[in-house]
Structure formats: structure tokens, C-alpha cells
Amino acid sequence: MKRFNKNKLPLQFKLLMYFLVFGAIILIVLWVFQSFFLKPFYTISKSRSVQVSAEKIAMSVKKDRNVLSTIDNVASNRSLTVHLYQSGEGILRGIYKINYDIPAAELNLQYHEIENYYNKARNSEDGIYTCVETNSLTDLATLKMNRLKESFSGATSDSVHAEINYHSDAQQNESMVYAEVITLQNGQERFLLVTSSITPLSNTIDIIRGQLILVSIVFVLLSLIFSVYASRRIARPIAQTNRSAKELARKKYDVDFNAKGYLEVSELNDTLNFAKTELAATEKLQQELIANISHDLRTPLTMITGYGEVMRDLPGENTPENIQIIIDEATRLSTLVNDLLDLSKLQSGALRAEKSEFCLTDSIRDIFTRYRKLTEQDGYTIAFMSDEDVYINADELRVSQVIYNLVNNAVNHAGEDKTVIVTQLVHDKKVRIEVTDHGEGIPADKLPLIWDRYYKVDKEHRRGVIGSGLGLSIVKTILDAHGARYGVRSTEGKGSTFWFEMPVVRTEKQEK
Image (cartoon, rainbow, N blue to C red; front, side):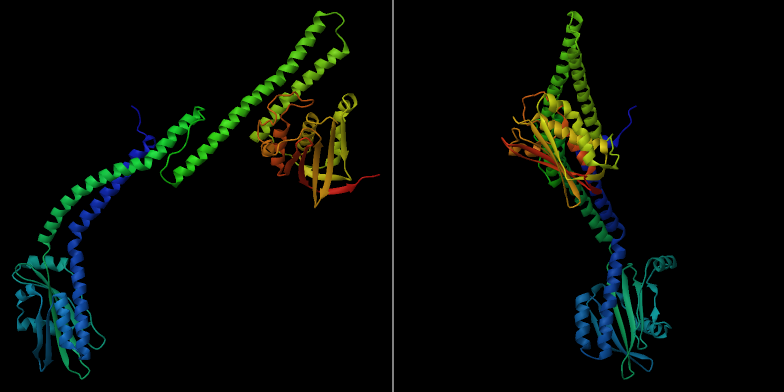
């Protein structure tokens, strides 16, 4: 049985599931809060409202300023029933009573109940007294109410005692009662009793649940529609880019990455379009390189085979000259193969620079001995100009390879004078090596491209005098590995100068 792999699910399907799960979480939270937390939240809010209102009235009574106006405004705004009494000689005398809480009228508090609240508030040691009182309820019901209902009360700093409790009538309508004894500045006492009904929420909750069912159905439908639309809209440009990338993998370089949607997709498409252009150019240049290398390989092999057959079939052709031609062509073939291997290893990082201190000037002189036959037989002039011996810290073998390839390149493109000049310059603790020829030069628009892999300024293949034709690619890779600066300046019809710079360790004046 094939195992389910969630990582292989389409992006659109994943986004759809995420949106639907998010919508389901919202619905669940909404149902939980409306079903289980509505009543506690309402009770707490109501309790806080009554407490704040009562404290505001009590403050007005203490200051004996705008008492009746304050009571009337607060009671009307918060739907409260307010009783204000004057205490003295054990008797409570009513001063003010107002009822804006219609359900509280059913409370019908008797004088002894009001007096009971007064005594409990007055005798409370810490100024706080809470209780739950019931009307026409069994003891079991009373016990349940005591466990379920919380009350709050407060006291002022001037010997004020306050009490808040819940009172429930026969219909189990809860009411909050706030009782506080207020001591005035002249020593007289006032007793403030504030009541407010807590509306039963059973019917309200039933109505809300009915609405929630309808809202949930509408929400599910809207969530489904939005999830399908959003997932498609988000996934469409990525899917389009993916299809184009598959075409690119099949080497169809005419494909366009033009999917739109959001910033990341646009940036990805720009990157893939750039990669497509580079891959197409690389593919073309690789084909040209293969054609050129095939020619370079075929030419020495043909000459080796031809001269070998002549020496075998014709008497008297087994001469030192013919043998030398076979040796030269075999050497050229070996050089080409070695350069290909070196370029592959250098670009893959398999060959690392092994740095040591050596004399760069002596290394250049040694390289020039390889060109002795070329200068003697073919009339080339290769000059080296230097004022002092320069020591650097680098990989001597690789730096020698750089100089050798640059000289080979200059020889292959030397002008009619067949002159190549190598110059060593020391400035600001750096040594610069310049290799100059007087050949045809390089067009200005092609100068930035000559260091690219497989690039040839002249598309017409020419067999080099010395080397494999891969010299500049090897030079670039070695100098990049050393962190060296390098470049070229050229004028068409006058020649080119290739150069590179490296830090100097020390110098020594040459003996004249």
C-alpha cells in the first residue's frame, strides 16, 4: 500500500485546507465564548458597573455636593435603584429613593432587610461583607448559588464599610445589592443602598445560539468560496512558474517566466529569466568549444596518424624530422588534454592553491626558456622588462601557469612584428605583470566577455601556435582563487595588454 506523503500535496490544496481550518477555529472560538462565557462576562461587567456607580454616588455624599443630582444622573444612566438613609439613634430615616431599575421593584426589600444590610456593613471588621440571599428557594438551591456566584465590595479610608451581595427572587432573577456606610466630616452617618437587577440570559442565549447557527452556515459557505478563490490566486503564479521551469529543464530556452502575483514570484521569475539567458548562452558556447576542441584534437591525431603511415609504407621516410613532427603533435595533444583537466578541476574547486614565498621574477625568466625555439626559428621577439626581483606569497605552479597562458595568448594574437612584451611593475606594495602584443586588438563591446567560460572573440577557429585555446579561462580561475585583481585594455588595430596584480612580500635590487 502506497504511503501517504503530505509533502507531495499541491500548494493550492494545502492553502485551501489552511484557510478552512482557520475558519473552523474562528467558529469554534465564537461558539465557546457565546455559549459558556457570555453570562460570566455579563455578570462581571454588571458588577463592575454597579460598583463604579455606587462609588461615584458615595463620593458625592461625602462631599455633600450635588448629591440628589448625582444620584439621579447615575441611576438613570445605569438603570439603578438608589436608597439613601440617615442613621441615628439606631433608626434609619429615608432621605432619597429613586428607581430606574424596573425589575428591582419586584425585590420589595423590607425595613428589617435594609437594617440587616446596614448592620452587616457597619460591623464588618475589614469593611467587606459578601453573601447570597434567596427568596423561595430550597437549601440545595441556596448552596448551589453560593458556589456559583461571586460578589464584590469596597471600603473607604474614613471608616466606611461596604457590602455587595446577590439576591435572587422566586423567579430566580438575580439582583446586585451594594451597601455602604458613609461617615461625613461632621460625624454624621449616611447609609447608601444601591440595587440593580441582573437580567436572566437564558432567553438571550437561546436567541444568540439560533443566530449563531445561521451565521455559522453563512460563514462556512463564505469561507469555502474565499478559500477556493484565495488558494487558486496564490498558487496560480507559482504553478505557472513551475511549468515553465520544467520546460527550461528540457533545454527549451525560448520559455518565458512572466507569471504575476506578488513580489516573491516576480523576483523568482526575474532570476529564472536571467538563468535561462545564461544557460542558453552557455549551451551555445559549449557547443562552440566542443567543435573547437574536436578540431584541435583531430588535427594532431591526423598528423600523427599520417606521418606514422608514411614512415611505415615509404622507405626512407623514417627521418628525424618526421619523428619530431609526431613528437610535437603528441605534445600539443597532451597539452590540450591537460589544460582541459586543469580547467575542470580548478572550476570545481578540486585543486586548491598551495601558497609559498617565491621569486616571481625568476619564475618568469624560467618560463621564457620554453620559447627559445619559437624565437629562434619563427622570428618572434619576447622581451621581459623588470627593475628588481619581486617575491610574492602564492602558488608558484599556478602563477607560472597564468603567465605562460597569457604569453601564449599574446603569441597567438601577435601582429606582424611578432613582438610580445612582458613588464613587471612595483607600486604601492603590489606587483603588476603586463603582457602586451601588437595584434588586431579586441572590440570595446567584447572586452567584458573575454573572461567568460567558452567565449571566443573570433568565432572562426584558428589553431594556436602554442597552447590549447583555453588559456584565459584557466587564468581567470587561478587569479580568482588567489583573490588577485586582473584586467585587459585593448585598442583595435594596435594590440592588447593583459595584466594582473598581487601583493609584494619583499623586493631585491638586481645586480647590474
